[in-house]
Length: 396
Image: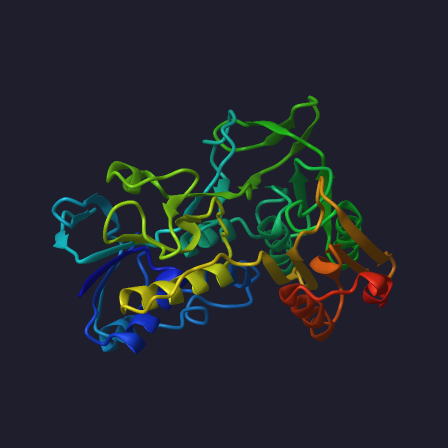
């Protein structure tokens, strides 16, 4: 069986390892736009903070691929797929036949379509090379501005701080941080903790409308006509799945590449996993679902009738050194939910749990020990019934 994988991220590498366990006769080739083997992309933050090297976050060298009988095509992404001939074309012009083709090519950073985004010293972070370019400004640039107050934006700001950069500002469109993971009270406590721990400024509820400067960026302008000075701007405004090649191949796409419970697209023998895959209308964009999808697909390709049922949205993170759990339903706009919460601004602690029909369906914890947060996570995972004792679950 000839398996071609587009992309070399965590879903791709997991698929390779699982396939080799289940089906040693799989003939695998990987095509990637990266110039180096797989590395842990989330750990680029450590390199930005001068706390790690690329070697430290690269678990598998070229020899590993060779030892596993995997042909790795670096700096040579797939640019075209022909389902009728079951053939792909790479950037370098290689034409390769396949039995199974897997889209695992992830996402690209989304940059706000605003005037000035093409100025020099404006970046987004996706690759090791991006990080190296940003680090060239250490010690010379004085005003770093990060557009986006999500997980990556906060991590980048903290990393810059740890690397010695003291004038760092996060600009967020929403009125509070991490709108996908937290409610407003939790976000307020997180912001206070970050301000205690780092020298980071926050501008919340701000819509960035323009970047200004003479060749290089000099100013960030907002929709209310206010502005701040900046000599380096980093966009951390989300990502978009890479779907253009799939679309051109006749594969169904919406926000991502549409797949069924076997991770198969509407085109026979073409599959998708990881950040690029859209399953039951959902895009996940985190590591655990990518790993789960890859393991499921390895079983599917090995003729095991395994199905992917979706993943519980759970983020158990250390955001800039602060433990945070966000799982399930956290801040619903409607529905028959009961919730209880408890916060301590001075200690940086927050707990919230939500129930529906007496079953625990969501939780947030901030600053809570990992062992205690894991207990809460397991209760949500199992749908434990706690309605009559809900206040007990938000005690510190």
